Length: 171
Image (cartoon, rainbow, N blue to C red; front, side, top):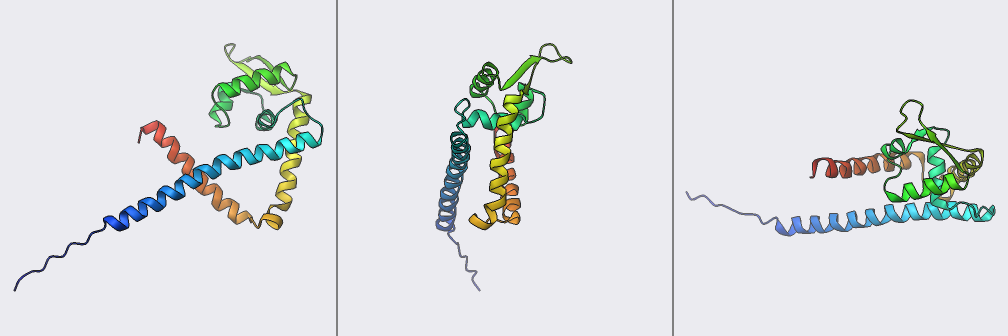
């Protein structure tokens, strides 16, 4: 009796799978960036509607994330909201225009603590209203349920972790 050995060529199915992942990954990255820009467009439209030309959408978003906190620039970066020269420029500009107060930390004199002024709080409140309006209509208008958002958030956290691991462990 002779043994018959069969080899199966998986290369075509693997390359098809890799092609599909490549396409989906590229689209996901593009959508994430475009969604961030669209959110800033929504914020910009509301600021324009209210006649607020003293702050741009990116700065308003930064004020929103600072919120009621007093924190250092390092803490702002650690929370993952901002990094790089754009945050330094925007923080400097927000201090100069009276949206942020900046002072030395009482705990660590080497650190600078930032917090919203009353003027900065007004902008934070505008963003709160924008979010409240969106939350009230996202399911009815866009068909996005809380379950959809929870699933999306879980997936986004996994991608965020994947990218963080790429940096930390040079994968």
